[in-house]
Image 1 (cartoon, rainbow, N blue to C red):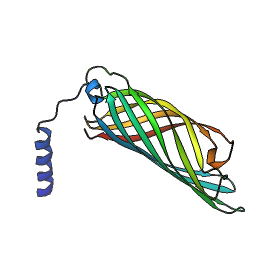
Image 2 (cartoon, one colour):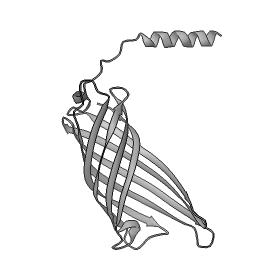
Image 3 (cartoon, rainbow, N blue to C red):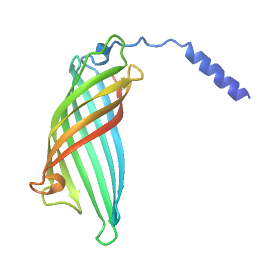
Image 4 (cartoon, rainbow, N blue to C red):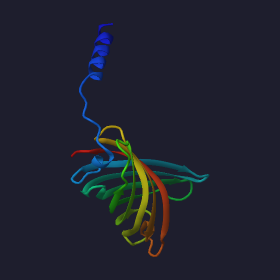
Amino acid sequence: MKKVSLLIMILLAASFAPRKPALSAGDKTAKGRIELGGSVSLNYTSYEDYSIRVISIMPSLGFFVIPRLALEPRFLLLHESASHRVLPDYSATDFGAIFNVVYHFEGKGESDIVPFIFGGLGFVTHSGDVGGADQVTMVLPDIGGGFKVFFTNEATMRAELFYQRVFNAHGWKDMDADELGIRAGVSIFVK
């Protein structure tokens, strides 16, 4: 009972603690701010004769060079493995970087939702038991848009819709792919 009472007193005291004033929508994306973020995705696909497992980790670093405009390199680590009833199992790993420019639209007042669009290009190196001899895959363009929801002045959740044109997909020469997808992640502003 003492622990519960102590917890209630701490929560009450925290509710009266001074807070930083909310930043305006423009101040949230001001020149000089630095954003650390990323997303993680897991995917499992099952077919009658085989299954595929994919994990993707994509950390990012954004630097606002002018108000609302950020340079945002994103780094990619993707691992795919498959099990087949008849054919041999395989695995492949991709590493890469995509260099995006992100424009954030001006919100109204102290809006906690900031929409954005982005565009860029990048490359991915491919290695593993599957794919062709080309080890470098080009991504051009990487374009899309989405929104960030600010929970505090420093923490956001982001969701985006993206399109990528991938050249030499999975290391196969002249095998190009169009990719359309969604990403979700979190980010913090360290400055």
